[in-house]
Length: 381
Image 1 (cartoon, one colour):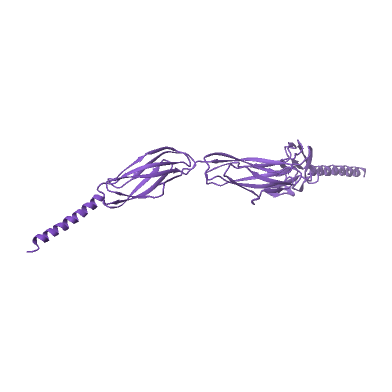
Image 2 (cartoon, rainbow, N blue to C red):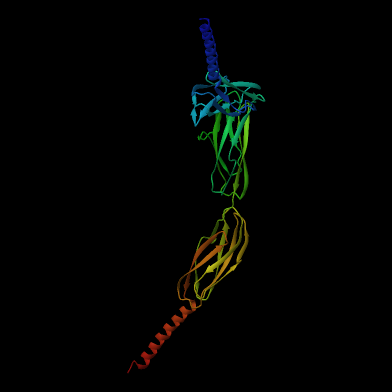
């Protein structure tokens, strides 16, 4: 009887030890892990963690996942595959990785803050964030694309973000200082305005639509923009690069593109070449496509350099064929260089020479005289 009692006591002790071991194993089987448990950041920063939930036990664990002790003005989000995670199941011997994002506000005191990542009842990982300096009374104006390139006819749209890093709501006056002749439309949240309101620690999208002057030359232009409130301000410099456009007009001073002349005569025609583009034109040649046996010369034959907005008068001398019969003839003038080509059709009306008219009258009179003579001589017969 005593032996039986002894064996029962031993069995009971072994059972208690085994139960305690199983319970301890259940408690310690789930682990929360992240390699960076203490980081130092500036106010307004975003801290991104990779959180591993590891199951060291022999059974599947399905536990609540909680991020606790986050400051009231801070934001945190725990996600996986784009989903917000509240509870997680992990198979034995496996791990699941979660993404934890913690946003530190701009207005924050200097110091170390601890948040806790907890899986189930007993697995906890403390994460410490040290704010290296206190938040300042600042605003910030940023733009991912501060430089754009185009022609004088282009419209440039810059998308900026105004950040209010202060602890108070701010009313900002929005200003821009473009070059003379340029225009800037300022659109907070896509509505044109000269001022906007931004909440504390908030942001607002601002679009700057810039249109260059019609006579702008090729080059790089700076456009400073500002957002100013009663206690803070922010500024940004936008840059527009205007590339050269090759454009040219080719006409006569009066716009008249016709003339009269007689066969074999010469006629001087003034032609005006104007650089209507935004960059220098070089080696512009003036040529003519003319009727057969006609001649055309130019003074000058080539324009070496023509600045934007400037004009040069070219004198064309046209000589008609001396055997040209009366009628309309078209001469096509062309002004061109490798970048641009302009043509002008010029109509010439060839009329009969005066001497031919007098000769015709003389022939008529001679013919009439001959008729009279013959009538007088032979009329009585």
